[in-house]
Image 1 (tube, protein in one colour):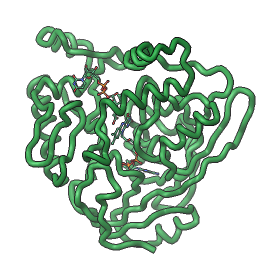
Image 2 (cartoon, protein in one colour):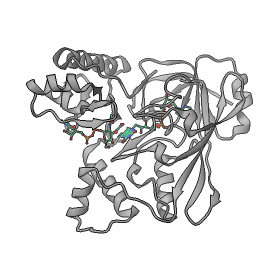
Image 3 (cartoon, rainbow, N blue to C red):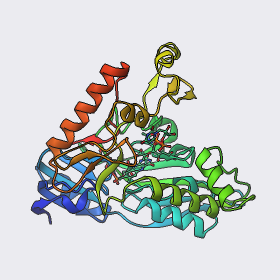
Image 4 (cartoon, rainbow, N blue to C red):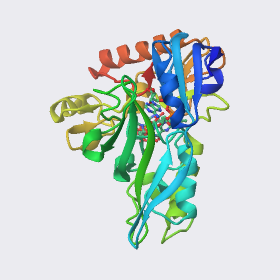
Length: 334
Ligand code: FAD
Ligand code: EPU
């Protein structure tokens, strides 16, 4: 049923040469009882591995979520409730929504990973976050094997986090996710500057959801490295949120520092901080900082998890020293 000594290189986007002692593909929920009966510890749920950094070989059992299926549960004149298996590829679900002319996912086009991982850090891009389309999810508690439904209020979604990344970290396996997608009137999210500019360049005055998706795909392809060519996990750190007084103090020294006003303070682009600390394009051995985007750490080929980790530590230490800002990793260290 499970594979021993499995190479994880094909199962995560940093492409590190690490192994798992035990590895199992979970294709059907019915398999879960027999998997949970296995005594291998620790256990880790894996989707596409696009937000993990393996710092060493994994000594326990990796349960790779491969539960598939997309089905409509409710369909009325205003919206559709769709349920997707946690192992579905997120972008395939976005394409499905576009084919069915359902609004809500277009700005989230081309984000790597699985549907089951989307709630973990409340994925977001280009002015939209996952929670805006979320209805509810089903998850299995690893300790008991019991199934449980989580409503939106119970998930504690916020910027790049949820209850599954905090209080319930590694305790539930998300098997199915339900989304509420717009059928009738759908308000497009066009506030992100790069989307506006791309639409303008393309001469599109009245965009539809496909136009938005196409623009987002073009922007992402231009800016972010393709993990099949160069190992990475997207943004390595979250964008820090600092108080207005800390912001004003920093602004006196760095008048060109960009920022966005958010509910709980000022969000500062971590990419700007890292670039201004001199790290953009840095490389030591095969561990480096992408030369086209300072927030993306890359494996140029044969970096180890420890080397990637040490680079991340060196970057956050220097940001702390220069700007007195603590960077929090977005990527999950394993
Ligand atoms: P994994 O990396 O496999 O797992 C991530 C975490 O979730 C782990 O802790 C794992 O244990 C847990 N987990 C995974 N599946 C389940 C499950 N079914 N049940 C319980 N726990 C689970 N993210 C954004 O938000 N916005 C972006 O724009 C974005 N751009 C990216 C661009 C690139 C090039 C890359 C490589 C990554 C990017 N990311 C982005 C990060 C990544 O795409 C998301 O975090 C994605 O949701 C991870 O999905 P995954 O299936 O690969 O999860
Ligand atoms: N910038 C630099 N140097 C760089 C790159 C960017 O100074 O090398 C500055 C620029 O001022 C730019 C600003 O940083 O305007 C923001 O950059 P960008 O628009 O590329 O966005 P980001 O803040 O780096 C965030 C998300 C991305 C998401 C994009 C688009 C986080 C941690 N990252 O990146 O998500 O795709 O916005 O919405 O919030 C991910 O989570 O993995 C991810 C890629």
